[in-house]
Length: 138
Image (cartoon, rainbow, N blue to C red; front, side):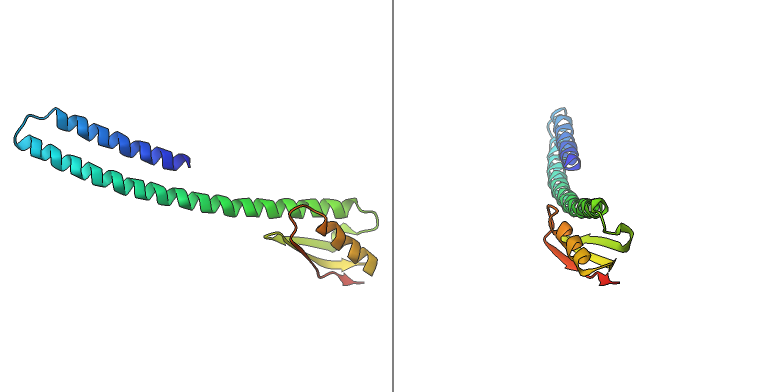
C-alpha cells in the first residue's frame, strides 16, 4: 500500500514539474513543445498509475498468503502446546501439520483414547476447519 501511494505521488510530482516547465516557455514553437511534453507526461502518469495499481494488487495477494501461513503456524503452535500440556500424551510421538486450517496429526499414540484425545484437542483450537487423525496405535 505504501508503495502504491509513493508511486502515485511520484507521478503527480512529475506532472506538476512538466506543467511548470511548460508555463515558463515563450509562445510559438516552444508552446507546441510544451503541449507535447504535457501529453507525454499525461501518458506516463497513466502508465505509472496502472503499474502502481498492479503492484498494489500483488502486495495485497502476498499479504493475504502470508496471513494464511501465519494463521496455520499459530494453529500448529497452539495444538502442540495443548498436546504438551495434556498429561499422558507423548508430544514427541505426535506431529502436527496445518494447511489452510486443516490439521493433520501423524505419528503414534499409545492407545485409542490417547489418539481421540489428541484429535479433540486439535479440533478445539480456534481456526481449525478439519482434523485428519492419521495417528498409528502402538
